[in-house]
Image (cartoon, rainbow over all chains, first blue to last red):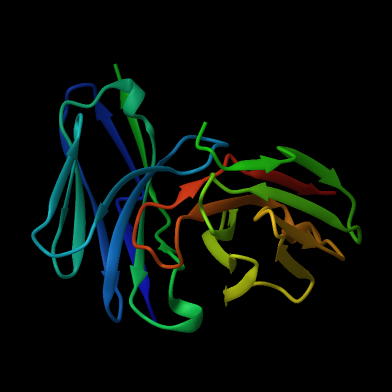
Length: 114
Length: 114
């Protein structure tokens, strides 16, 4: 069964203290790995899609990387406004009921304090 | 504004009742996905429609049903509501089925069953 596990569940950082969030996945064939940011009571906001091992993408203070079994979201010199829940999701190759759907992890709740 | 519109934003109803949640996808997107997010389950895929046809089903209860209309908006019908159905319900859209691109989520409908 396709699964996504994120760690840690919660992370508290001081402003400027860089760190990484982990997303481990088990999927029959990875079509894409997605990172989303979610603020309380809001819908997930798309950040990145990664397709193959070795791929990296950056956006402001965020950098996402992908290996064959996991993805990392690196946060460099975070600011309080980066506080949110970060969700990882995978899309698998397949037919019928599996094609198109995303399998989400439970997320990492990031708090950045001044 | 993500371009995916969900109404209503909040809904409070009693057990045993029936409600309808509405979603208008981003202009040009043909696929609509419904997800349920509860505190103990995270984001769970419910159902997908593509250009008016059901394409995939996830862990959707028999009390729940959905449809996509010719103008591509979608409705999720929840009946015989139970306390455990209280959750955030999100709609997402993408340009094609299983496109591999970032799915765009709406801001959600918060359903409270009392």
